[in-house]
Image 1 (cartoon, rainbow, N blue to C red):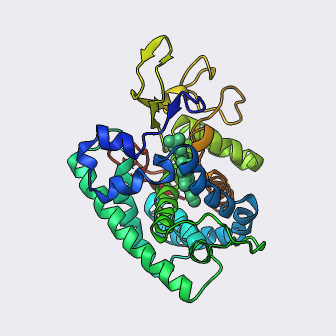
Image 2: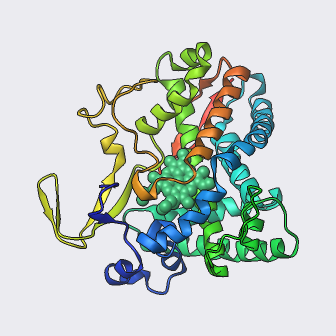
Image 3: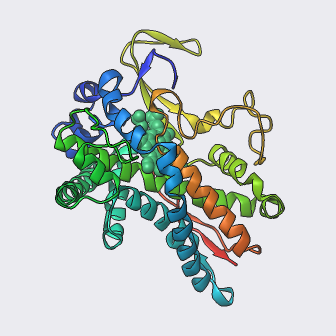
Length: 359
Ligand code: HEM
């Protein structure tokens, strides 16, 4: 489904016909004109710019900054966990790390990050497969607040450019040193919405992966010890965690034309929820799918989706996860889970609200 031309993402025209509640809402206006809610040429135009800015080279250049951020957050965590106390890993590390990294990428000053974290959390309600009136209200609040913030940031960077994504977009130039104009001719509103999307898509997802990977490694027998002996398995452990308990369990597609899925006829325009988490536990794809097996080679992990909407931040999320796990294995060899974690509500994103650990 994710790679077939018979399926598209629901776009603005579909939203107007099928979600009358969305009309005039900032959150619907944002989502159904963003990369996640556009197809074909409209999608390519936005995506090309962001893919270039999140190139492998730019992500690698963030590596040192990610190391420093991880070291600082693990100092805070070590302090909270001193003398055998339980420390909340989600609140102290898993959430602040991607907020700081995506904040550095975009150019958000550290002092503003906590406020943006709340707005991003509200905007995340857009990922619910069925949005309640409360989800819409929160998503509107989040999107409006983030739009206001990033409009001001773009204005500021236009006046005083720095080496970050906001400045690159403000200038309409690339930041990888080539200095060419992007020529995409994006409007101010489109540039603001790109920053809103990169920010909102970049932190809660990654926070989910970091918390769930650590939790899986600590609660599945022998896995933390395995990684201590074999730190080279860290990337494979992240991949298995993405499969076993990934942050984005599902996404939505619309039949572009009359088609068929698993023998079920679908009319054009039919909405289908694509549950990647179910594919990840499909015994025809993965042997013994409920077992957490680092380094398994069967099946294909769809945690970052597939096809033209494949996550543009996948390399950055993997980098954050690898740097963090390696540092934790070194610093906290005796790390243990300390009681049950709390989970966020909703179906669109999986993540912990609380993850108590002891060192
Ligand atoms: C573990 C962390 C992450 C996970 C699990 C994740 C997951 C996903 C998934 C499943 C999609 C595609 C949805 C679909 O096909 O309908 C997606 C798209 C996207 N992601 Fe991520 N993501 C993560 C981190 C990030 C980061 C760090 C960034 C940015 C810095 C980011 C930016 C985006 C953007 C802009 C899109 C839209 C791409 C498009 O529609 O063409 N993501 N992500």
